[in-house]
Structure formats: C-alpha cells, structure tokens
Length: 453
Image 1 (tube, rainbow, N blue to C red):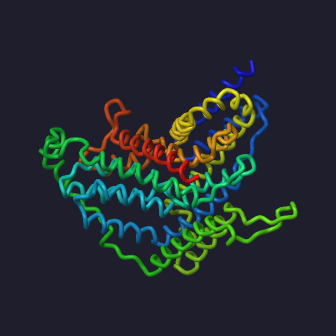
Image 2 (cartoon, rainbow, N blue to C red):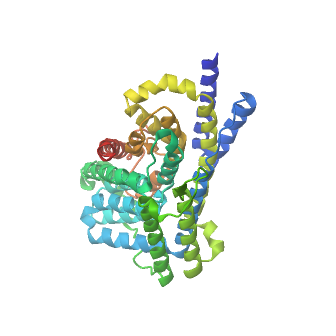
Image 3 (spheres, rainbow, N blue to C red):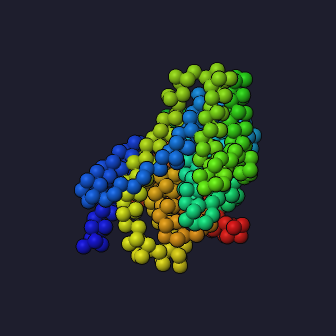
C-alpha cells in the first residue's frame, strides 16, 4: 500500500510538472502549489522547506543584470559580438555559437541570444551559408553557457546546495571549483556541436525546397531583403561604465569564492569562526553592483522591472519556488524508500543520475529548477558530489522538444525556413546539436572532475 501511495503521489507531481511546462511562464510555480495542496492536505505529507537562500541569491543576481540591461550595458556587449561575426562571416557556424555561449557566460542568462539570432541569420544568407547550421547550434550554445557562468541561476543554485549539504557530504565546492569543470566541459560540447554543424543539411544552391521558395519574387525579397544590425547604434558613456561595473562585480565574486580567507569571518556558535557564506557574499556583491549602476549610470529605477532580464528572472524564481518546494515535500517524505530502491543503481551506474537530471530538466524547462529538484536527492542517495559536478551539463535537456523560447525564436528569425520543426516534431533542427553538446559535456565533465578532485 505504501508503494502504491508513493506511485500515486509521484504521478501527481509529474502531472503538475507537465501541465506547468505546457502552460509556460509562471505556470510551473503555480502548478507546484497545486501539487503541494494535494500532497500536504490530501496525503498529509510534511511540507518540505522552500529554497529561500537560493531564491534570494537568484533575486540579487537578476536585479543587477536587469539594471545593467536598462543602462544599455547589454547592447555594448552585443555590438562587440556583432563586429566579430561580421569581420569573419565565412566562419559564422563556428563563431556564432561561440559568441552566444560567451555572452551567456558573461551575463548569466541565455536570453541574450535573441538579439544575436537575427544577426547570425542575416550574415548566413549574405554568404549563402545554410542558416540552419549556425542558427540551431547558436541557440543550443546559449543554453549550454548557463552551466559555465559564475552568475547564472543554475551555477549559483548548485554551489548553494553543495554548501548547504557540506556537513552531509563532508566537503563543499566553491563556484570557481565548479567552473573549473563546467567551463571546459561546456565549451568542448559547443565546439564539437559546431564542428558537426558545418556540413549539416544541403547547401542552399542544392536545396530543392529552398530554391523553389526563392523562385517566387515575393519570397525572395522577404528572405534576402532583411538587414538586421546593431552597428548603427551608439552607446553612452554610462552604458560602458555599467558594463565595467558588472564585469568587476563578477570578478570579485569569483575571487571571493576562490579565496575564502578574503571573506569576513564570524562566530559560528560553536566557539569558532566561519567565513561569510558564498550565498550571502553573492547577494551582497550583486546588490552593491546593481546600486552602483543605478546611481552612477543614469538608470531610471522605474524602467528596471520592465526589462526582459528582470521579467524572465522573476518567472525563474517563481518556478524554482513552487517546483522545488513540491519536489522537496515529495522526496523528503519518501527519501528512505528512494534510497533503498535507487541508491545501489545510482552508485553502481553514475550515468543513471545524469539521465534522471536530463529528463527532469526537460519536464521543468529549466536547468536551475532541475538542479534544485535533483541535486539534493542525489546527495541524499550518496552520489559523489564530484560526480554531481561532472554531470552538471545534463541539466540541459529542454531542447528535446522544440518548445523553448530561444529555439522558437531561432526558427522565426531564419527567413530561409531551413531551421525548422520536422514532420514528426522530434526530428527538429536542435535535437542532434543538443545531444552532441550535452553528451560531450557530460563525458568531459565527469572525466575532468575526477581528475581534479
């Protein structure tokens, strides 16, 4: 009977995740509330603890990044990226994904890709390069960069969870230690995916469907008539100043994470002292950097909540809130059963954890939410934290179905129609580049993590 009730409860959690993912936006967080009502009031499970510190850290990072966007600082980075791409147009399939990956690493969010996608499509068409080749891998690479960014929600969440469980796993890992593994792993995945993309699909002059399309003068004008660029715009000194402040703040966070002796120490309640936690360190530095941008870069505070980064970040926080609380309630109530059923499997086959993380990330459409939901469970099952770090790349699985906004944007910006959703849905432009990137990242990450640690 206990096993039957657990299965029913799991199906309820799964149903809430599926409905929330289908509805999109804040729906994941709200559907987490539905699951909580059923689990707590219906099945009388003890409610778990919502990840307050993780959410506050995410909030501080998002506040700083949104202030940067409002100042025009993001446009500064985008314009430099476009100059690079237009200087080497024939290498767009390699440089495009590297640029979107690097921008995500700097900014902590894959949403920066929306500005670059029409530029990549425009360069491809002008050089008669099949746009699907750089477009698909560039969209995938932007999301791959999340695991390599010191200020991304996913990295901050993983660092926070490992720190919170340091007593259980007898070891904590700083953000620089995580990035020492995730940056080369993520970058190797992007490079291999880009190399594979160089020859994917037919060249435009040999693509019968494309040639038939441009035979229509109206369609030809639509496909080749666009011209998207940021080079004609100019940024103010305030935008450059804001960008410098943001980069300095990121550097400070990385240095303080690498050298805990630089952080102030306080009484730990047991007669000793402990350095300021990285959760609080990140929160303080990001709030301070955001305030400097606001005060010295002529930012209108009323405009910050209207920025795209702020809106996307608030949705992410809300989703983490509802999903993580619901997941913690379910897994916390059945941890012993899960340990007895899955513990030996995960310990003998570490890839089973990676596969579970990959599937959950697709259900949640969020790397951060997948990390918050799965990493505490994995640590509770006895999974080595080094393995958890090594398989960090598996938290990106939401490319399996072409429903993520950046993928849909890539399809929309490609006027040639080569970046597409296939007849059977699953055979879309992003599936193979995504699988190559994630698989490579996991293999490199797992190997390198065990060599380092």
